[in-house]
Image (cartoon, rainbow, N blue to C red; front, side, top):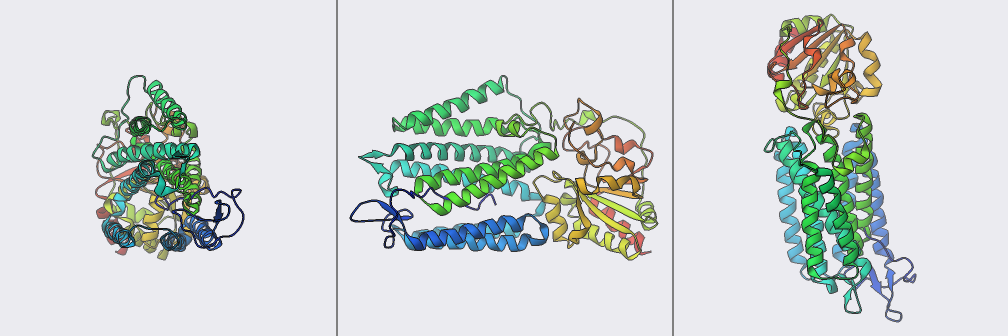
Length: 503
């Protein structure tokens, strides 16, 4: 929902009479006798319907089973909002806007069709950056041409509009630069290790304080240097807030940037006096913040630290391969896995980002189907931060048509590992690492993880013993007596297991 849009603050008390269709560049129509703004009832109704569609969209997206319907509601709501805005507002060139929409929509359609699921997290981060940049550009457009936005009062920009403008630009700039860093880290272009600046907390607090004070000063002095400095400082603080965060914490960062993009759009909705923008932006901002809070609880992290940019700054993804220890381990084969899983009463599959990289979700579902035909109970265990964005594993499994009733969250399945014959870990690492419970020096300490070590047998699929996971810490599960390492490409290994099961 990071690209959903946003809403504005209607002046309910400025005038209550209904008016003819609007003649200004906002949601309101001028009442000739009094000169006050009154809400056009048709515009208000259309935006209300759009807002309801967005709420249904969020409700639908809360479950994989209803996610397609939720997407359709979101698309319908956005279509209503856009068409209403175009029809009821004074537009300099409708043709230019339609051309721009066609170009942007075409680019988005092509990207959505071609992008691999493994690249979806950085795509989402990239889209968030565009939302933030759009908020900055709209804010500057309103500043440079306030008359077109109907925010002039006695020849100067209304002080309240200046405050809204400053906040919108600041949040948008933070979203843009922060999302760019998240994109680079997720894409592997930039190291996922935290980058620690000296006195970073002091620098961050000072920069944020300067932005707040300048925004307040902007309400009394609309000089261009004030808004320019706010913009530059906001771009800088967005960069500073994200670089100390390690790769293991990126799912929460993506969720938080989603929230920022919503608040940026909502702030611009106030400036533009556009109700649809305010409603949608508030929904996106609030839902993103709630999701971030839920994920922080799932990782035993501080929500305030996420907002402040200190999340993971003292660890959280060092990416240091030297953390691996040289200890004895057992190597298994596809035949071993096929035999033991077919003889098991219950198999729990724990997927992770490695499964996404190998695009192994379809052959994994085939393996599950074969086991179920043999009378084996098969369940899939999904950690809240598995993958590199919220819901990444759920989407992949849904794409492979894995039944929704076989997919379980951590709190619903963690108690079953002790009664499970075989755990099949494919591409996951940090979410099954017992160091999160036992090692106080570990960057993932305190994060709830799956109790896979309680199972009778563990098969661990990974490319080689050289990797230590995204958080950069070794995993004791590799070396346990009941663990057999299946070292291979995840998709190739599962294909071999399926062949062995067929025989």
